[in-house]
Image (cartoon, rainbow, N blue to C red):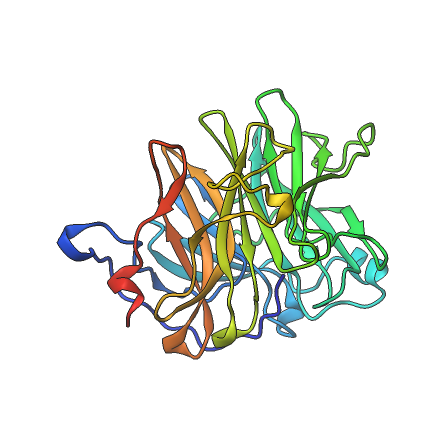
Length: 335
């Protein structure tokens, strides 16, 4: 979920090591102002998209690029107006579009994103596709594919925060959800990227009984599916309490449990990262497979910048028991 009004972005510095030479999460540089980031490597260039700036430039999705994943540059917005279906579906255009998710299959790049209003589940997830994405002009070449899934008042779920995963059996799945009854899943047609009409089942993956859980992302690794989510309060700057949690399952549709065996449908989740020093409210995460490595991308609210949301990445370290941990924050999260 996202409510984001922009502040002036500042740089963070350079790479660092922790005590005793232990690697830390990198100190990223350049224009890092982003919320709910998604990331894709196109050729040798990284492209990141994030939630639009509220009431700025139509509130369309923001774009950043980087040659190395460390130094980032603002690349504008994806269009200047929201797709026409948004106002038609919601009745009025929201201040901004939220929580994009990039996915690639057979040369086509799929972009899922949400249209909603803060605190309501009158929401929709839309889709754009691109077969000619040029990282030098990442806002071009996108084709509107319309609505994927919707929710409305009276539903027990919220159609925002989309995350796609394709499984080895050739099937495709979309996880989504925020508050209400938690994280849900629907099967997709792998080619169109839209809901599979012959499987109307709505799967339940994780819930806190109406409490704060959102921003799902799923990674398949060594026979398990890992479900990453954000718990607690988003979008409140210095008052944010977001934290990154994880559980896993042998099946993409669950059941997911945390490291202690507590089902995620009963509020379970193992904590990966919470507020530390100036890194306030980390969350809105996505985990991607970047070549030979897994990479977690997320935002946090910078205590040194008045709570401005900033981009951060981390390499999950996989233990012998199959559970991930993250490298320490730079300087232990201190300025």
